[in-house]
Length: 175
Image (tube, rainbow, N blue to C red):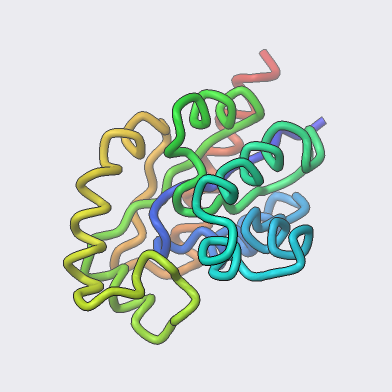
């Protein structure tokens, strides 16, 4: 059985677009954790944040990782904050291969400037907020292990590197 591959990292680093391309190349089923949670909850992430709170959303994310998806054969694009709560990164690592996508604050701002569906960026100074959150989350993202930088790279280039990391990890796991 193929291990699951989890793409983690800050919003706007390319987890969804790179995930779809990588899943196709690796013959894995693509699942976006945020979209899965939205379908299950019957409302958008933004609405969950506003109506139920961030803590309720984090409970939904934990359920999704613990039992809400298959044990193998999937590429999961994880929400930007999924690995932040204590124990979540270790839980995700126990489920498969983890690759963390990275990008600079300016790149993230450029990629997300036309989106109003990102609750954490609905502020007066989005670039300042991105910079602040990246600094706060830097250590946990570093602990994720396999890092792939997405600045000034095509989706195909990033996906190829993600696939290489996955194949190496899959081979190591089978030994």
